Length: 251
Image: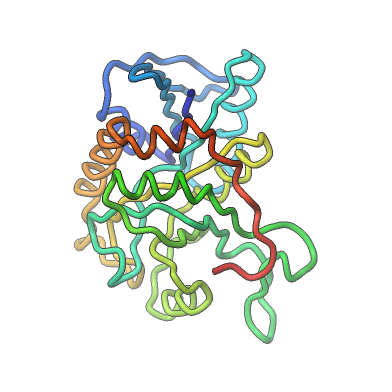
């Protein structure tokens, strides 16, 4: 099975690649460099697509289309990288696997509060990865399972943190790319996962307390653990299922 891993920035891509050697490089249409490796019966390509849901969706769609045209389609897409954790459930250095990938700010502000785009009568705001894949990866990585939010603006206040936690019970982390990756994967009918390692607490910004290096090291550890997971191999052999868009309010 060919697996596409999509990160935002080069540091995250390099952390994933550090889990296995060697990697070659080829250039996708548009100029993105795709790192490619093969081994253990699985081909792993890693793409740093850029920051934010739009860049993530565009980069993922480009890679998926190029693979399909080459008659070597991917069987799984993984959105991976570091992110913020909601205390106390996702402490610094921990790993989170998304059971729901949610666009937290796709909608409209109203006098009565925020309305997701689905309640405006169109679109989707959430994708739910295959539970068997989620469980297998979480078991292999020692990860917590919960909702991961995709935001276009990183949360930086206690009030916003409380608002998101109240609106999305079970939320564990936020990042900026997962929903974009999931949208592209769903359009191509390819299963998707999101894996985040926690570099900082969601809330008032305190850069001195961030542990980016530790989170990147944890990301490498996740991708070292996955090839040895019999549970993941079994789930992948079953083929997984494409992400399921979820209408209405999110978890």
